[in-house]
Structure formats: C-alpha cells, structure tokens
Length: 122
Image (tube, rainbow, N blue to C red):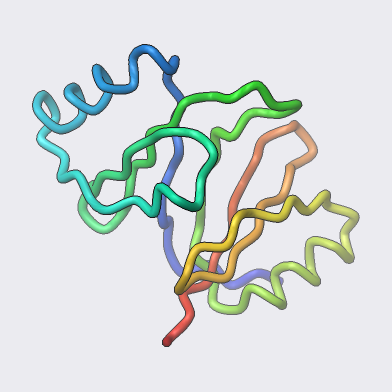
C-alpha cells in the first residue's frame, strides 16, 4: 500500500518560444511567486512557482517518446511505494536526482506519468 502525504507539484508544458510569456502570465497575471529551480539538473528550460503549499512547474516539451507532463505526490515511504508498484507490474521511470528528494515516476495503465517523492532530511 502507498501512504500519500500531500500533492507536491504539477508540471505543465508550453512551446519553447512561449516560455517567457508563460512566466509573465503566471507571475504577473496570476500573481504566483517564482522560486528557485535547479536548472543545472534539467536538459530543458523552465520555471518553478509556488501556489500555497503546492508548486507549479512550467517546462518546455522536448521531443521524447512520452510527455514530461505529470503530477507529483509526496509519500511517507518511497521504497514501499516503489515495491508496491513493481509488485503490481507498473512501469517505473527513473527521474533526475534532486538534492533533498528521493523520487521516481510511474506510468499508469492509461499512459499518464505520475511522480512519487519523499523528502530526505539532510
């Protein structure tokens, strides 16, 4: 069983040529707070913003076999969650390492990418 703690973030994609327009919309029109994004960890450009205690991640959609759009949820035990999904034949996708988080994604039976993460106390 997976013990969910909270929604962490959701990731939307925009065309590369409209990334700055998206940043302007979400910060100036909606009034969201721009926060630090570890850009050196990602191969494509993007921005992270706060929406209360959840984050919005905006990225550009690179040419990949599957979309990078996803929803991320924090769990209490990432290892238990991974084992549970693997035991049920769910496809696991490894994610780039982000300091302070253990994470991976999985693909649901309908092709949706979902990320699970656990914050690591340093």
